[in-house]
Image (tube, rainbow, N blue to C red):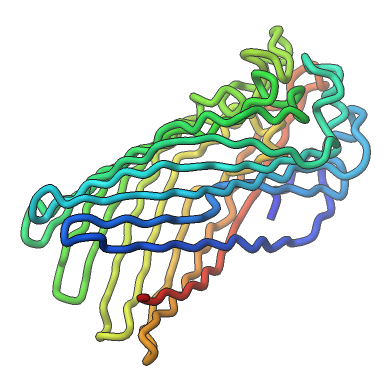
Length: 333
């Protein structure tokens, strides 16, 4: 559900999004396995029936549609008992569209390529590495790293994104541990870092618009997101041979500073806490059904110097909450 802006009220409908995913894994030898995963990651959609930028000359509905698809073939190898390392090559595809942003046409290095150009696509490649080790009889440690994915430009929106349409996917890395508290109970904790600010179209502040950094230019204005750290806690309980129960919680630092809420009316990723419950059940046929529910409570980011003087000044305050239902089925071939 998009956020409310206290300065720009709007009318919108609740939207649900279907995000399919699939995977396949195969044991090639006792010490070698390979697989492939196809999934969505991230993405953002806002749709304002009442254009929040109408006061500055925009017309019609406003919003963005960002979709991301990843295809990740991977291989894992066991170099020693209790330890495994993995590597993956990731192909990424993005699809983007923006509407109702004509108010920014006078502030771009590439006029005619800011808004209402339909959907455009971009592609890129990246690398993922990981390690999992049994360091104590009841304790496993892990580490992972995902490279920045250099994406091709959104040519239709070269007037909106920094560098003539650039919108790369940021690098991330993390550490984790899993403790076998009892034969039935596993407790886990993870820490992850996401480098949003390294992608200029995401990390550059909107204030650059009035310091020579036009939209679409090299070093131009962006959404002003900060790098964030995420802490995750989880529990897995094997109730019996067929039923496994799971619960988790995570907390992330706020990526959207109070000074950047104006442009982030379009990309309001302000939720911080996530709570999830789920489980899986093995059926007589040999397959396994999984079900999970996630809820992210409402978060408000109140603007502070958020609307630049060139737009008349003032504040934009965002609200957002999310929920997700996941259903999956797996089976051995």
